[in-house]
Amino acid sequence: MPANASLTINPTFASNITSDPNAATIESSINADIATIDSYIANDVTVNITFQETSSGLGGSSSFIYGASYNSYYLALQSRQNQSSYATAAVASLPNQANNPVNGNANINSVGPLFRALGGAANPPGGQPDTTISLNTSIMNLSRSGAQNSSFYDLQAVAMHEIDEALGIGGTGSSLAGGTTGPVGPLDLFRYNAPGGRSYSQGTTIAPYFSVNGGNTALVHFNQAGGGSDYSDWGNGVIPAQGAGNTPAQVQDAFGAPGTQPNLGANEMIAFDVVGYDLTSAGTALEFSAVPETGGSPALMCVGLIVAVAAYSKLH
Image 1 (cartoon, rainbow, N blue to C red):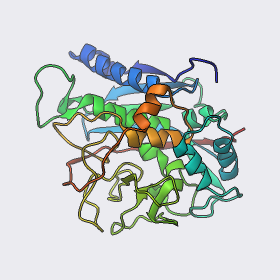
Image 2: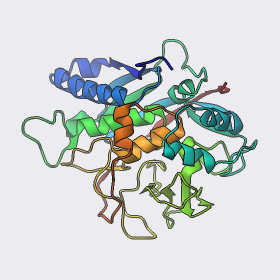
Image 3: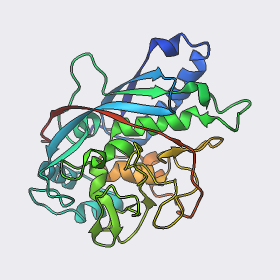
Image 4: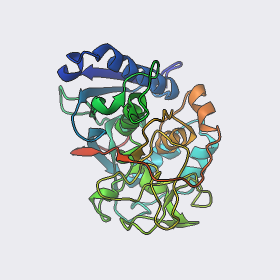
């Protein structure tokens, strides 16, 4: 990786944003998110994202998904230089074998930017973006300055949630929505319900959590609500087995919380790190900041994901 390298996200704004009377404010808020995430991830990778408005839901993303063998992915993680203690523990929790340890499938699925960061060549078809992000700006506070509508959602938080998914955490971190027998996602490798016990079920009566040390430490609960919500978002809604969720609000929560303005935190940075991204000094500092996990009440609206399956790409 070249010195001073960093992630580069190139945004394209669809005509329904550029023609919006509030276009300048919308684009400014999205660009602020892009500047933030670019400053946290050190890989010299370019990501192309199209942003558009939608009139339904809250936010969603459509990404090209690629596949690689589990073993090539494992070896790529293992070969990373200057690994953090989180990444070292994460690799140690994974076996060096042909099939993944979650469901025994030989492959793993993820987005092109992550595979490119690890040395792969997963690119979308010519002329198409890696991801298209849709935002229902009609129910959002478009800027964090000025008067705020407490019943609206924060544009920057929703856009950042979807940008994270374009990079391979959150919804694109899991393949569980498509069934339990196919290729898994990167975050599925760190989905546990007990020390030493990986969880890969769509059941709504279990409480899986994100752990990078074999399930011994629960960093944050995963979402298990189903119903179209993303299994690798954080489970801020009610966790059936416990009657509580994660608080305070976090960017990668499965359900948006109106009136809040969450920023990227330690859990998102740890996720980026252990799936294969290198972090800048600013990203590392955030990764090692404390994020408490306590009980909370369910929030209101799902931040959904639509995935377009593309092709298979081998890591090298």
